[in-house]
Length: 144
Image (cartoon, rainbow, N blue to C red; front, side, top):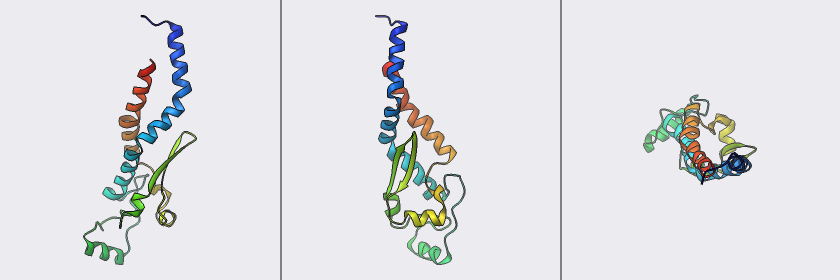
């Protein structure tokens, strides 16, 4: 059965009316990947969402990390993992915010800046075009 222009208009109306809730669903279903991208920036590169290196560890912290065999050449904000395990997201007003529920979160933001949360431009592109877009395309294809 061929589709009419009215069928396409109806399908577009469904897409448009559901796009916000579908975006929220996609963010929720891909939250683990989003968080992992943020944590990778911190742990693998010691950079914030602006791509800037985090403030270096103090000498006594470097000594402790070296003794434990942990990374100390740059700041990772990872000690026992509580801060990382506390990572979560919230979707509000068409924006996704990454944060940590760990009690140290506020102190770490004061010390290292709020840009410890969020994605670098390159990780944003990975998330938007390789992850989010793939899910959104599947949603669109259901109707169009």
